[in-house]
Image 1 (tube, rainbow, N blue to C red):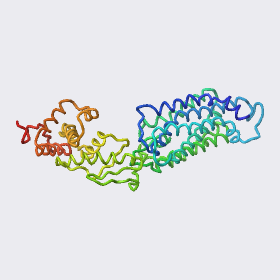
Image 2 (cartoon, helix red, strand yellow; image 1 turned 90 degrees about the vertical axis):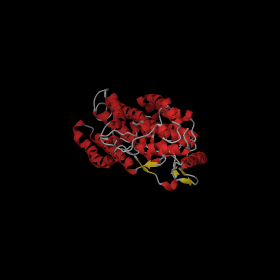
Image 3 (tube, one colour; image 1 turned 180 degrees about the vertical axis):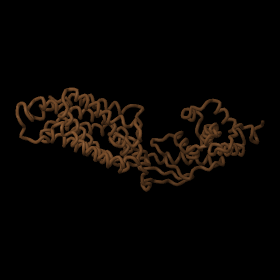
Image 4 (tube, helix red, strand yellow; image 1 turned 45 degrees about the vertical axis):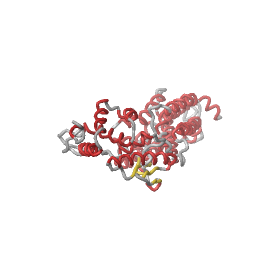
Length: 415
């Protein structure tokens, strides 16, 4: 049958435009966050963007199998095909293959909104994996459509594929998320890169799915069910031990040799994707570090921002965050007394570094009472402010020091 006729009569052809519209809408959601200007982070998102297209292609393949089976032109009925089962499948699935290529290309177009002027290129390993995902799920859908009777097979394949690709991200143990390939969308910050193991695990599973489909097409009978499941059992034995150590993580630390470091009051190191913003990072970080040092607070020796397109409030907040403890103390059964000091100390540091109250209130949501307390602290002499900071900074880093937030406890308060 000519490919144009196949395309016109195929169910998947009618779903292409609505699916592409959905993909564009999904990636333009204001709640969808991806690391800006980093090709690897953007490319990794196509494993999630193509969940619905993959379900569409799997269901379309099941429909083609049912249509061919009911025609009686293969294996009985109106005649017998002289071609092999695989040759027939590849020919019958032309519309689905075209749709798969279109969906993959369109997914790359969708993610370019996060890669404006980004250095480098899309991660070809991820694109290859997505291509394998389309191939494996299409063949599996076709095989299931051939083996199972009834039109309900098509929606069952669509729903089953969608659940397999989306639901494991809500399951425990966490390593289950690694098996279907969509967990790659967790990648990556600027300081991270995809680990090879996170790519290997879903590749093994997909190869097992391809082997299952090919065996099912060769046997063309449900009586060979146990034989067709053998590849899935085999790849599970290989993939699960590799997935367990990963948990939900798909990234590893990026080689710091790719960074460019600018010296000054604080050493500012940026990744290639942040180089266009290097001057802004350095200017505002040096300004904040100088203000902190004049007050007696030791600024960080180095600063590596985790974002791009910076604003002055963002840089100052990130600089202050590196001065604050990154983890909270574990105090056992004793309550952590320093909790009440964390927000006031952070606000005092930001104001000291040069941030405005308006910018801080927008990001912290602190109450007016906290700002009033910090205002009283900043009215103290420099030595008293520094004593207040050191006392309460110690309280948020240990379980044994009690916070002393009241400015009247310090010399020069006028109390």
